[in-house]
Picture 1 (cartoon, rainbow, N blue to C red):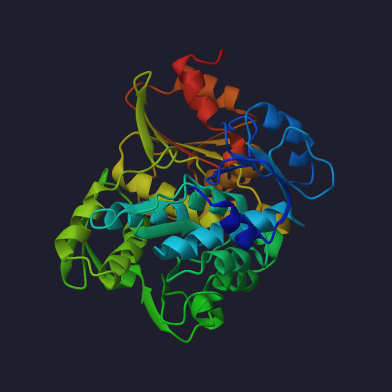
Picture 2 (cartoon, rainbow, N blue to C red):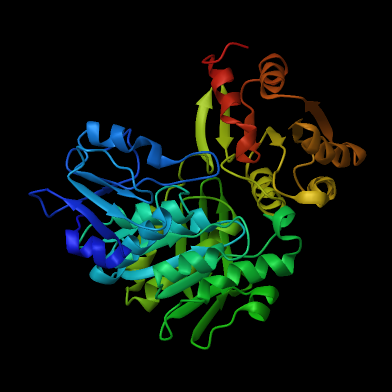
Length: 446
């Protein structure tokens, strides 16, 4: 997205220190590794890095100029803009674009399912509108800015995913996004270690309505905590699986009835059905027809590491290791067990659960052991915390093996699991379960 120089100064509040450039159209870049000739370099800062140390490198690579917070800058820089805080400037530039092009803006958050819901919403709304979305799970302040910087000028609908590490972060994103619609997929135990209680998690998620437009719409799972803590006087729409009749469940397929209308998803899982209800309601609010919404749902495909299927070494592998928390692990594993024969479940540690991590891992094992199906499954756990899941399962008589690392579990699968089995992978991202697939493929020596 291009800026005029006066737009940059107006939006960021920058002081123009130097200008010898003949150009007046600029893109903003924050990465010297990818910077292109003629762009302006905006150096971001963090606890362990300072992009301002790379000003000269940016100019050497062709940057027309740069932002600074100090007094020093490269002599060859044609434009120099001084700001107090580069991240604040970046956020303000992103908000400038949001206001200038004024797409219908949808903000999505939740303890789990927010990335999937964003993708389903995009699949639906792009059937009628020129739609732009957050890339992958780039859902922090920098990802928000990148999303706006890459938005096409003719964008009609903007979908922004909002993640958080603690209180105040969703509010900050909402402030600069100024959403027309705000969606909360659910409130669960993700980030419990950081926020301390489910009430605190709900309060943090409900910050999304802080800057929701007064004539906007709030859409959320029908959740007691969300209802309790959301502070918005405008239109509210709540949804849940209780509003749905599921007519058919098959591998990679769901058929359901919602408000007397039939829909299909080419993915399994009741939780995906629930996620799709946000998309249906958004489509209706934006004036889409039933046929457009239905077609958009049917077009949805999972993104990488979310129920990603592949055949390796005679096994069917389903990789759902994009992330994990107790609620998503229970939902995903129970869905897998319902649909697949010869199931092998590989579970890894879940992160960010704080002082309750042992108890919450045990709760997953207790839940899975109590299912009235999937009793013939083999459970392979990787890591100390996942071992707590396995202990609960083993106490109920299920087959369990525990391993210290991905190499050990990969070797066990190769040596002891017959071809034809379906293997399901679920863990937090830091467990790097993609290594298991690579090892089974032989791409990593085992």
